[in-house]
Length: 251
Image (cartoon, rainbow, N blue to C red):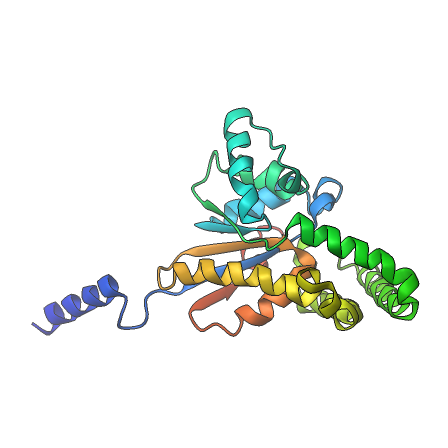
């Protein structure tokens, strides 16, 4: 009788997802190198596909703006070729994620807060800082160059398993610190903290919609965004963060 009662109670927990808040969703953050996927032998398109297949996500949260996804999906469905300008920029989507929809069952969720007017305004302001704020611009450039040199020296920028390390994230964060401190507020929506907050709001909303469902989410943004997202994802108690290395068949 005790066993029967326990089974009934257990099923009730599953049905209403109330006893333990439901099953935690799993989240994997996979930093992309965009055009580098077509030139980097260690992290090429086939390696991207290899990871996606191994992860087998229910949802892929992509660096695609919500207003650009419908056209990209329609073009891929009708011709197999994506011409939508923003999506076309990312080989990981046009050469890997979209083609994988033909063999896998996952939903593409657009989570980029990017807009063209915002990007145009940011580009114009950054160009002006070279002459209007030369000291600030020089400080930003030096930090960026130091970060690039460290990544090259420590060979962290090509192997995907090394890109997905705390050391990589620390170098990127330090390299972006002057840019963020000096220009974020002035750049408005296009500032570093500001755009990441916009991206993350869409990511968090997607996770919230499926809270307690025990699904697997793969977040695919440029690797530079990775540390920003991870710092906030680690604060969530309703998800289980997993690392990319757990899904690699290669050493």
